[in-house]
Length: 273
Image (cartoon, rainbow, N blue to C red; front, side, top):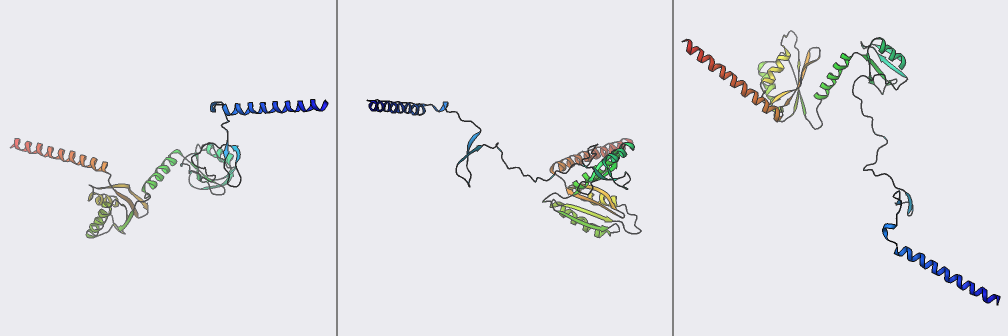
């Protein structure tokens, strides 16, 4: 009798277990997709070294950032009181070396003389700073801008031509024709004139004379300047379309004014006669 009761209880338990399992599976099968919500922070991440694993999704990025990105070169100017180095090498306002010193001492000198500190060479050991006035900084910025402007751009051809200020007229005409040919090809032309011994020729006027022969197509990229004792240089370039139109318009107005003045002079002479 006891064995019969035990068998009956086991059969009932088995039926209950099957019923619960079917009910659970039926709920999963009939569940709508909207109700199955998964965390957006988990996703399957393929790994060639392993089988499918689960891990946190990485933030979206169009390109992998390099850990060795080069430092952007800071613009030339006063650093204020921001000196990240403990020991620095300081150069005076007149360009003389004041030696290595603590940054606090460098700032003290700056305040005492009402000057500004400019970083010259960061890669030196220790880094080099210079005490400068605001005017000195401005002049150096202009100088650097002029040098950058004069340097040829990538892909731009720059030709160079050098001669003496005592050059003969025929030779100068030949040089000028060569410059004109390069300008026609949209090249930059660097012209250097050396001051001849016992020559009083104004080299700046000579530059203007060369430019005047091709004024309808060339202009200065870098205006004439003395580069070293006894030598001056400039860089010529072809005018842009906008500059050509402005030049032609100016020449037209100039010719119109001259013609008008000539007509007025002619009328005035006729009236006096």
